[in-house]
Length: 137
Image (cartoon, rainbow, N blue to C red):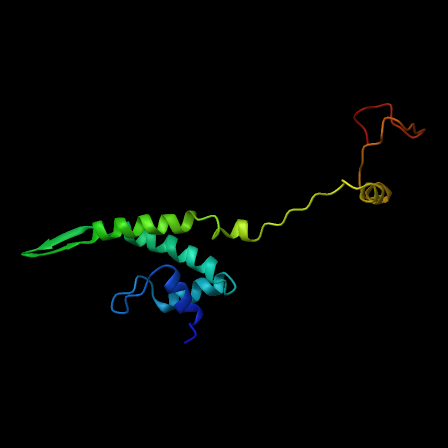
């Protein structure tokens, strides 16, 4: 059975109780739309929203019936914090590309040949167009 995108996000944040879901399908649909159907980004955003919702839960007692929402919320909150802080799920780290430029002589020459770029002239070469005023370009 293939999961829908909404089911995948629900599975990521463990919002699996069909009787009492933490967020509605419309909420998950909005998060997927917001993040261009990225399940990981939508799940991290959903986890943050669920944390805010759980922070509002309290313990309530009515006669002999009591609901200890804060204890369950605290345990779920700790799990969600671990999920959010996981560097493998951070969108910044997932989309980070590194590039180092100007380390090859070909790149340096191409950069210097581009009239739109400013560059520092080597001290070994002299130029008749050098400025004597250190503040002008």
